[in-house]
Length: 309
Length: 329
Image (cartoon, rainbow over all chains, first blue to last red; front, side, top):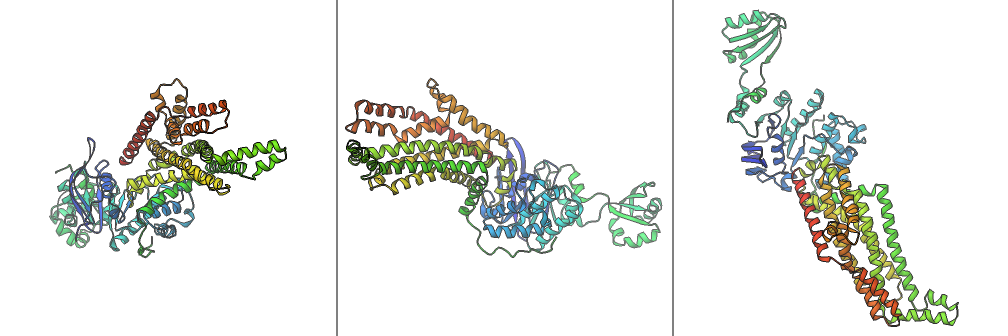
C-alpha cells in the first residue's frame, strides 16, 4: 500500500530549541498511533502534518504534496488539537457551523453536517444549545472530534483525543475511529492511554526527544508485536504450585511469587510452546487461574527503553 | 456511537478561497452587530450622514432660484428680497468655488466624525480580531482547515473594512447622494465630485492604516484587557500628548491619530478651498475675505512628510507583529 504520509529527514527547530530532529517515516492507510513522552515532538509533528508550520529541513509529503500552506491538502485533513480551550461563549452548533463554512460549505450544509456529527460522537441533543464554556472535559472532546470529522477528511489527525474521557467514552471514540478506518480513511492518533492505543492501532510511531529511535520502532512493528510476551503474570489460587509445575515442564527460566496476593510472574524460556498449548498446561497444573496478562505492554516497554539510535 | 456515517459524501464543490475569506469577514461583522454598543455607534454614524445630507439639501434649497430663502425674504420687503436674490446669484455665478468649498468643509467635518466613531468601534473590535482567537487557540483549528494565514488576514481586514464602510463610507456616500439628488441643477453634482473623491481617498487611507494598526494591536497579546489598553493608549494618550503646540515633532508623529489628522488636511485641502473663497470671490468684505484665508491656513498640513513616515512605521510594526504572532501559533 502506498504511504499516505512520507517523511524524509525532517527536522524542525524553534530557534535553538529542537522540535523534531532528522526523522524519516511512512504512514500507511489504517490507524497509526504516535507515542512518546511529553516533549517528544508529537505536537510539532502534528503541526507539520496539518501544514501550520514548515519543516526546517527535509521533505514531507501528504497525499503526494507538501502540506505547508497547501489548502488542497488541508481540505483532506481533519485535525483535533490537544488544547481543551474552546470558544466558551459559542454553542456547539454555532462553532461547528462556522468551521464548516470555513471549510467551504454553505450555512445550511454546515448546520446539517454539524448536527449529524454531534449525533455521531454521541453528544446528547439537549447539550447542543448550551455554551461550550459549560461543557465537561469529556463533552468538549466529543465536540472537538465532531469538528474534526465535519468535512469528512481522508486523513484524521488526533492529538490526545481521549484525555478526559471515561472508559465508555473511550470505547465510543475507538469505535468511531475503527469505523473511519474501515471506511477507507486514515487516522493518526496520539494518546497517553497506551493500552487503548495498543488495542486500536495497527501501526505505531515512537518519538523520543524529537527523534524516531529505530530499535524501539522495530520493537513496535506488527511482526514484533505478534510475538508472544517474554513475561506473563498469573493471578491464581496457588502461585507456588503453578510455578513448580511450569519449571518441571521446562517452560520458564525464572519467576517471582507474591503468595499473599496470589500473583506469579514468570519469565518464559519457551513462550511459543506454552502459548500454543496453554489450555492443556493450565488444566494439567490443577491450579485455579483468575487472570493471565502480559507483564509489560509492548508500547510501555518501547517507551521506557533508553534511546538507541 | 453509530457504526456508519449518517452523511453521504459531499458531492458539491466547496466554496473557494474568496468564500472562506468572506465567511471570516461576515462572521466578525455579524458578531459586532449583535452588540448594543456597536448598534448605538452605528446609529450615530448614520445620523452624521443624515446631517451631511441635510446641510447639503438646505444649501441647495437656499440658493436655488425661487427657493425657500427667496420666498421667505419676499415677506420682509423688497430690500431683503433683493439681498436674498443676490446670494442666489452669487452661487449661480461662482458655483465651482461655492459648492466646492461647501462640500470640502462638509466632508472634512464628516471625516472627523467618521474617524472618531471608527476609533470607538475599533476599541470594541480589537479584542475580537485576533486576541480572542489566540487566547482560545482557535487559530490552530482554523489554520488546520483549508485556510492560510493570508486568508485569515484578508478575512479580518474585510471585517474592519466592512465596519468602517458601515460607519464612515456608507453615511458619507448617503449624505452626498441625498444632497445632490434634490439639488436644483447638475452643478452641485459636478462640483461636489472632487471633494467627494478627496473624502473617499482619505477614507481609503484611513481604512488601510487603522485596519493594519488594529490588527497589529489585537495580535500583541492573548489578553483582551491588554489589547484594549494598548489601543486606547496609542489612540487617546499618544493623541493627547501630541496635541499641545510645543510638543516636539517626533513625539507628535508617535501618535497615529495626529498623523492621520495631518494626512486628512493634506488630502482635503480645506486651506486651498477657503483661500480660493477669500481671494477669488468678488463682493466679499476685505476682512471677511482675510478671515477665510486665515482659517484656511489653520487647516493646512504642517508636517505631512513626517506624518506619512510616522504612519508608515505604525503600519510596518503592526504588520510585523501580526505575522510574527500568527506564525508562532
